[in-house]
Length: 234
Ligand SMILES: C[S@@+](CC[C@H](N)C(=O)[O-])C[C@H]1O[C@@H](n2cnc3c(N)ncnc32)[C@H](O)[C@@H]1O
Image (cartoon, rainbow, N blue to C red; front, side):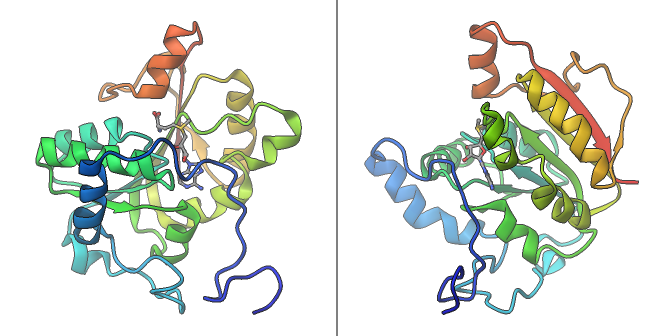
C-alpha cells in the first residue's frame, strides 16, 4: 500500500463531514440492510470496482435521462423530484448514513422506483460516471465551512467542480441553493472557472419545482435568506 492510499487502491480523499449521527432506529437499520443493494447505481466503491470501470447507465436505467443530487441530507428534495419526474432516474450521493436511512424510509412511503443511491462520497461516484451522462445536478445547502481556512473544503472548489463538469452533458443544468452569502460569492467565482455559464435567474426566487429542504427550513427559522443559483454546462 503506497502512502496516502487505501488497500483497495483508492486515493485518499479527505472527508470532513459526519458519517454517523444518532443511533439508528431498528427499522432504519432494517431498511439499510435490505434496500440499499437494489438501489445501487452499479459498482461505485473501490472495493467492488478497483479498475474504475464506468457504470452501465443504459443497462441500469434504460433510456431515462439521469440526474444527480449531491449531499441529499434527509432526501426531501430527492424524493420530491423523483415523484415529480417519473420519466427521469435520479442518483443521490450522501455519506451521512442517518440521512441515507431517512431517505430509504421516504422512498418506501412514496413508492418511487426511479431513485438510485450511492451511500458515500460523490467524488467516488464521479470517477465511474461516464462523461456527459448526467443531464441535471443539484447541490442543496452544501456544508458552509464558514471559517476562511476551511473554504477549500467546500464543494464549490475545482476538486469537485471539474469532475462534475465532465460527467454533465452539454446543456445540462447545475443548481446551487445556499443561505450563506460567502458561499454565494465562492460559487459565483469558482463555478465559471470550471467552465459553467450562469443562467439568468433572480437569485432570491426559488425554482418552480423547488420543494424546500430541512436545511432551508432551519435557515428560514433563523432569519437567513436563501439564494438559488443556476448554471449551465455549455
Ligand atoms: C448541510 S447538509 C444539506 C442536506 C440537504 N441537501 C438539505 O438541503 O437539507 C450538506 C450535506 O452534504 C453532504 N456532503 C458533504 N460532502 C459530500 C460529498 N463529498 N459527497 C456527498 N455528499 C456530501 C453532507 O453529508 C450533508 O448531509
